[in-house]
Image (cartoon, rainbow, N blue to C red; front, side, top):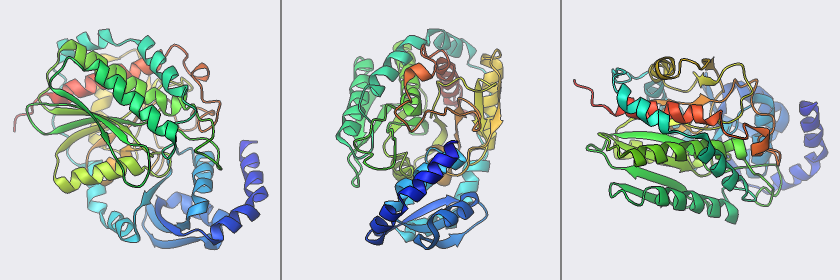
Length: 401
């Protein structure tokens, strides 16, 4: 029924869409090659294929058609992003040419960590609470939307930054900044706990929300699960680490990315900057949707466009520290969330997800994505907070050569 409705909407608005497209400039995107046939059927001559590889295809698509692509790929393939937007054709071709970097992100040797910081991890895990997560999800979902190019999108990100500053105000080794993007309003918020080295551990999730196709800057998009849940889970991880007095060996950064829903734009810019600056990122954990218990597994690791060695280590962490949880693997397709930006840049990235792709939350990208339609007490999300604590602490230990 949902697919039929989307198709009817597409053809109902096709004349208006065509008129808009006629005067809109083309934009370069990379999409999953598995989406190409579907996109060709929907957009025809409006979509120009520039180059195709086994997993990624570079295309030009008219600007006005991009919201439709976003909606249709979400409905048909279950991908929140579903594509990566590029500043130019040249940048897109560089991405296709960076196959070695992608493979480095997917296959590079993950450092030989051992699970041997049990006292620290279990102490922190015991402090993780569900109620602060639920409270922060509600705060963020009360914004009319968190769209990347709306005033409420800016206000909500400022609220995240203010809350993180309040949590960390007694720590002199912690800073919170707003990373300004030149092409849209919403900034990315970054919190840094300075370590003894400049090697980075990154925990991230997108701060924006989206609903509808037209007038997205005015649409009601509470985004409680997608992705207030990930930001709130990350915030609880921050609270526990900071209040524990933990002083890291590696520098730990928490990021609330702007503009994920419109082509992973915020995380792409940051990941490419880190690669260009030669910053050593030893591990990236993406928290995107953590609070909808819709599957027969508690945690699902996506094993495409992610680091296989890092995924395996996360599986070991679950088995060791959270043996009561059921977990497994699934696939979410190209550019389904911000981890893809880091993988493309050659860094090991993983995304533990709240369900299988098939059993995902049916309310996301609508005004029905509320806390009441997820785990209202955040009892599901707190599992991810505990896992993230274990991940950060265990990979923070120095590995001898």
